[in-house]
Length: 435
Image (cartoon, rainbow, N blue to C red):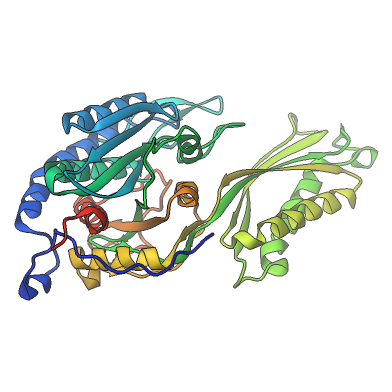
């Protein structure tokens, strides 16, 4: 991942000119008024999206709501980008750079267990199964925050020095079999049109103290690939295992052997990796040793330079473990997302803008995490910064909070104001009028 040279900090028109005012984090009075005005609608949008979630590449209603709002702000709006994606362009009244802001749109095949009055009761089909659908990763809040940011920024259109592209991306939660995930597909379909952003920003709801954001330079989120393994043995009677080759036993040995890769074969500091098997399927009857076993899992890694070495070790471990028992194994690794890496100089400037808006104590440092985010593909095309905002209710620690993708994942809605302020800060640091 390419890193970028240091960039001088620029003042934003958000902040008061006097030294006394600059000591207090926040925005100018007109911006503060607009923020307060849009907060009730932001919460209403979030609740509507939460109650009406849609799976990847099925975000039809969601896209319609987003597009209607952007059109109401007199933005240039394109729909159907990457099937259900929406792109809005705000051209400021003054010349300046182009930037992009991104929110993801899709929900997950998770049945909500919370007791919110606007809880999701939606159901759908996923992998041939009837499933509940829930915004269990906070994408409902991401969209609402970006819609609110568009409202504030559009109201200041004449003062904007540049152009802002609002990207509402479908299918962040993983590519369909044989297809592209939302970020890669949007890029393939020329999401930015004839514009070339100089910077792009995205955020994500994450268990953490409400009212804070977390910014991490360098590798921040892991690369994520799908692992499919088919173990083939020889079917036989359960009472005569010697007459065949048991792929279930072989599969259990493979699962254990794979765990030696992160713990014994990779540098735990330089190359932290995770290999997880999340599905094993084999057999149809209690007393028949089956012919094959199918396994699916996920591979996570932070250092892009170690990826191919990791793959080689996985393939070798699986093949040789199977061969030791006379079985065979086929390994397929499918790319899902590359590591999300924040260029340090770019992040430093974004952090300074966030500190001016929120205060030093509200902008936290952190450590890399192993979940993945396809915002990383945008970072290949545009210098980009990705950060978290904390969503825990007061008094709830990160350890106590339900994690993302959990049926009880919860967002403390007042935290969304912090996300809005942070997004406005990093945007107007680039396209705000000079002080």
